[in-house]
Image 1 (cartoon, rainbow, N blue to C red):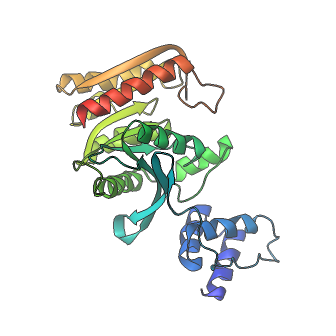
Image 2 (tube, helix red, strand yellow):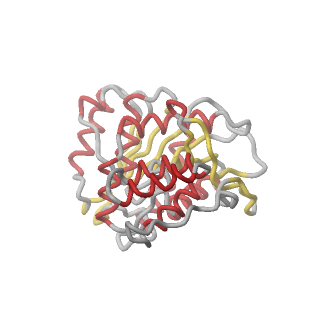
Image 3 (spheres, rainbow, N blue to C red):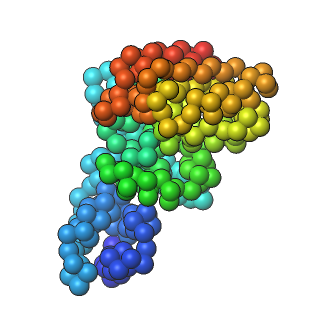
Length: 296
């Protein structure tokens, strides 16, 4: 590890020359792992600018990287190749014993790859799928709406879609996975990314959009992967905008379904938030599993 390079990187972050996302990318390369870079980031916030934090001991391995047996599942953080030589990370779960699994990519809300999204990944694995949530924020997770909004605005949509494509390539390349296409499901920001992925990813086999920013009717006419949509009547995203997207799907003859839940709010599927709607969530979950089992 080049200690001088690390100290220069810390100084650049503390004085505002580089954003957090760039710090994590460069920090991971400098100290050997994303986990170590995250520790360095935390330390940066605890020391004044004229007293930089100690260098992280890179001899400590990133304990979060690697698969472990958990009952009948194998789950954990994995690394895989991405666009332009970038190394990507994500959370993978799949049945330990089964083969010929169908592949599903799970896309995070604007909070990042948090425990709720990891739980959704494991739920897919319990249902017999191989599921992977790509870490589109490169290790950053927040519970603060203002920070989440900032992270979402900093995310480059085209780059995120390309990383989702790489996640599909990795997942479908596993020996236990059948086929060369994957289903993609996303929530909130992730739902919008599912829709955007449907415009350009040839390795997308089916999609499920949970209250994400919809496509226009004209854009929707170009989609070729069967699409499933969910929205509540008390969501900030209007039912009419989702209906317009599905009208485009229908006009082109694409298999599609839109389910509207009376009284449900945004993030009704997230059981860690006050907006959680148990009935709508249960119905949407069953329909999503059936959709992917039918179309993958």
